[in-house]
Structure formats: structure tokens, C-alpha cells
Length: 267
Ligand SMILES: Nc1ncnc2c1ncn2[C@@H]1O[C@H](COP(=O)(O)OP(=O)(O)OP(=O)(O)O)[C@@H](O)[C@H]1O
Ligand SMILES: Cc1ncc(COP(=O)(O)O)c(N)n1
Image 1 (tube, rainbow, N blue to C red):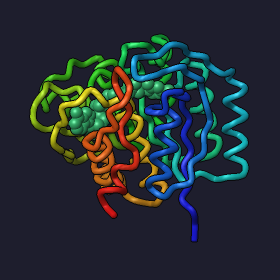
Image 2 (cartoon, rainbow, N blue to C red):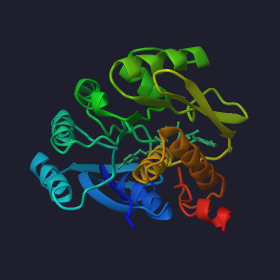
Image 3 (cartoon, protein in one colour):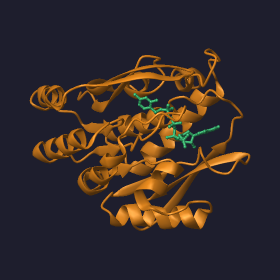
Image 4 (cartoon, rainbow, N blue to C red):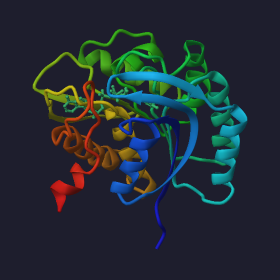
């Protein structure tokens, strides 16, 4: 039996709700062996980001090399990439190792508003990494930055998804967490031909730290098992819905989601 294996290239969140920690917990819950290449160490809790300590480009390069030359991941996810040099390096390595199952979560700012990607790195993300992505998972503000378009209506979302596809991403998912408030939250998937919506009930809660990381990690885990993008998003939506609904409720600010809720509801 082949053990599905996934690599996350992202920042460490000391608070455990987002970044590398959210990715590993999600991989584990979905039965996938997780590996990591860390871009930066952050000091965070539910109140915000108290420090960002990027690693050297050399340190990132060697981590990815170690994994690529021995452990053969079936899918690769990127999260916080911090600067243009790291984006350039990851793009080169994705090409060098012929990694086709690349899921790009274009992390830009944390919930509390602190920057996790330098402004001058956005161009590198668009020109170097986006064209290599099998799936890109921006939230609405990230999709606005990447496309230069204002997104309010469903038609705007569709136009932005088309533009991101034209820029080279094979599949685009524009997430609805930041949508105008309603009873439901809808994520829009575009594969270059068809649109598909994934909709669930909106939970009124402040405990949404790491929702984006967790969702993209669940998509990555399912793709590492050989699922189609649409199948992977279906599972990921159920995973994040359970993780938000069964909230853990600790921390004085934006608390983490519940990574074990999905399996608890199934068994
Ligand atoms: N209040 C909510 N209730 C139910 N589902 C939600 C809620 N908020 C976000 N989601 C879902 O969580 C996933 C992540 O969406 P969101 O738009 O919040 O991403 P994000 O902004 O990148 O996350 P993050 O806040 O971690 O940066 C999507 O599937 C979205 O539909
Ligand atoms: C290391 C790291 N990566 C990603 C996020 C985004 O998550 P959120 O927007 O929920 O704070 C984060 N806070 N920290």
C-alpha cells in the first residue's frame, strides 16, 4: 500500500491554529503523512502576531531538497512564503522536481492584520508561482490583490477566478469567509471551463484563526490520495465546516478551529 504523503512549505504558528501546525494536524486527521519546510517562525497567539522571524533562503532550500531527494511527496502546499526570494526558490524547486500537485494558499495577512508576505513579493507570487499551481485558494481580499479587481458580487468572483486562471493556475477557489455576511458561506471553484459552488451554513463565531490554512491543507491531503480537485474540495469543505462548528473556545482573541471535529462527527 502506498502511504499518501504531503509536504507543506509555510510558516510556523506558535499558537498552533494556523500555518505548519494547522497543516500537519489536518494531514494527520485525513490519514496523510505530513512533511514540512519552514519559511519563518512566528510568535502568535489568539490575540495576534507578536513576532516574525524568517529563516534564510538557504535553510528553506535545504529542507525542500532533503524531502525531494528521498521522501517523494504526492502533493505540495504553500502557505506563508514571506518574501520574493523564497517564492523564487520554491518556484525553481517545484519545476526542478516536476511537482505537479501544487496547492498555493496565497497567505498575505494574519487575522489581526499583521503582514505575512512583503508587499514587493506579490509580483513574484503572480509571475513565478501562480503558473505552477494546480490549485490556488485565495480569500476575497487576496483575490483582489492578485487580480486588481474589486470583488463584491458573484459575477465579480467569477471574473476574478477567470483572471487567475488566465494567469496560469489550473484551478481557482475563491473562498467566501470574507463575503458580505449572510446565513451561508460559499466557495467558488473554477477549472477553466466550469464553475462549482461549495456552500455551507455560516457559523457566527470569532474562533476562525487558521480556517484558510486548514481548508487548503485538507484539499492538499485529498489530492495526495489521488482525488480530483472537485472531490478534494468537497471533503475539505466538510472538514472546515466541522472544525468551525465544533469550536474549542479558548484564547481571548480569534481562537483556533477544531482539527479533530471532522473525524469525531464521522465515527
Ligand atoms: N463563519 C464561517 N462559517 C462557516 N464556514 C466558514 C466561516 N468562515 C470561513 N468559512 C469557510 O472556511 C474556509 C476558509 O475561508 P476564509 O475565507 O475564511 O479563508 P481565509 O480568510 O484564508 O482564512 P484565514 O482567516 O485563516 O486567513 C472556507 O471554506 C470558508 O467557506
Ligand atoms: C504562520 C501563519 N500562516 C498563516 C496564517 C494565516 O492564518 P490567519 O489568517 O487565520 O491568521 C497565520 N496566521 N500564520
